[in-house]
Length: 113
Image 1 (spheres, rainbow, N blue to C red):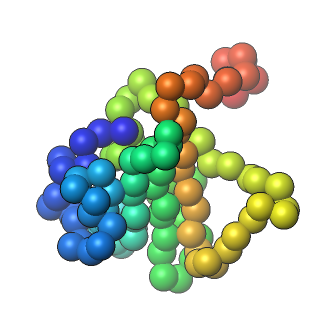
Image 2: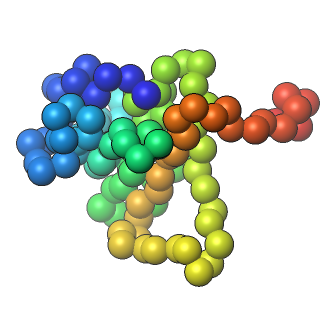
Image 3: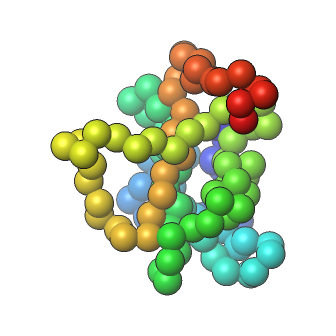
C-alpha cells in the first residue's frame, strides 16, 4: 500500500488516522466528480480499504480507481466473498480491498483473467 500520508489532500480528520497507518478519505472519482468514501488501514498483517457511496454500491471502475490510488502498480489487492457465517454487513453500499502482508495472493493463469 502507498504511504497514506500521500493522500492527505483527501483525508478527513478522524480517530482512524492511527499515526498515518490509517484514515478516512473523500476521494473524488474523476469520471463523475462524486466523492468515494474510503477508510484505509495498515495493520494486523493486512492492508485494507473500504469504499462506499451514499446512494449505491461502488462500480468495478470506481473500485479499480481506488485500487490504483491506494496501492502500488505491482501490488495485487483483492475483494473477498467470505463464508456466510463470517459475513458482517455494516453498510449496504460498501466494498473492500485487501492485501496480505508477507504473502503473495495466488493468481490464476493470465489467459484465464
